[in-house]
Image (cartoon, rainbow, N blue to C red):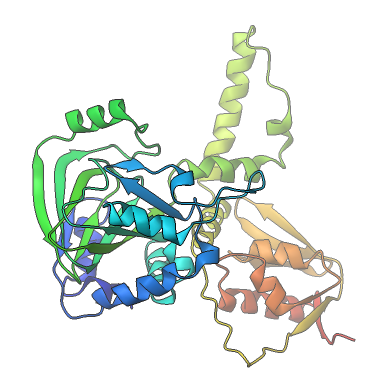
Amino acid sequence: MQLAEFLTPFDADTFRTRYFGKLPLHIPAAGPARAALLPWSRFNEVLALTPYWNEDTLKVYFKSRAALRENYCDTADLRSGTPAPVNPAKVKALMGLGASLVANSLHRVCAPVDAVVRMLGEEFAARSFANVYCSFRGVQAFQTHFDLHDVFAVQAEGEKTWRIYEARADAPVAPVPPGDEGEKFLIATRGKVLQEIVMRPGDVLYLPRGQYHDALTGAQASLHITFGVGPATGLSLFKLLEKALAAESGFRAYLPDARDPAALQACLERLAARVRDVMQSPAFATDVQVHQRALGSAAADYRLPAQSPPAWYSLGKAARLVRRDSGFAVVHDGGEIAVGASYPTIEWLLGQRMFALEDAMARQPGVDPRELRLDLERLLRAGILVETEMK
């Protein structure tokens, strides 16, 4: 399922330019594809994968409050630091009383949902995931709140009424603390109802990050998938800068004593100028690209019983990866070879006496196989790498 199909009948390009990160959008069902992602039968099958479900992956809520783990998990003989496994009988008993379920990261155990998660992550250069919410007649599992990421809610079964409020938190990175005081704050700041939407099977509701909302289950049990999409923020640049500048002695040196304001100010100005130059450099743009690609995940494409024979390479001569503001290059005795976003993989393999291509590709999340193969071809032509066989 590609983005255009996921959003049908709404135009995907219009969504990107007018709504993503800006405005809520309700898209009514157009065919069975979205609702078919998680019918009751599939959800029951996934819940039956008991080794996956524990106090972290499955949450139980009753009247907007999280159930204590001992009320739905087995805690006897539990080793310290180990999540308590879910007890299905206890969960069923609580659901009989009207409790709601939140199945976190369901994409890890449900292939159709995982396919959408990976598509959204790739489309928006983002970390993506899927949580599933199961609630019963007249239940409001959560009070008014906002999320720290963009949300695509897909109604799979039943109906749910969503209220979207006019307030929107300003690029939030931390939730409002739970409890009565937090709820009072959210109610006091949510503003008027902007939209009230009844979600039916196959409907999708998009909410930008920070949009205040709440939801109430209708006359029938409700099942919906929330796809979370969280692109990298400006805050992630600090870690990238730290890594990029760690090799420079000026940043590793001690700072002047703050009791000498002139010396400190001169040092800060010098470092700030260098930070500006690095952030505006092509090499740092490549760092950002590598970081964004790593937010996604690759499909577990095993295709057994087929096997992929590894392609083996060995190091033909010494070479090293060099970082400059203008970009990355492999330097050797015959010159240098420019490389792009595959540079972390190239740096790793230059430190190996022998390696398999498949192993090298697995070392860098989000590496583009085509880019890596082109870089390897240049290294082969330069004699830095040599095709070889495992003996």
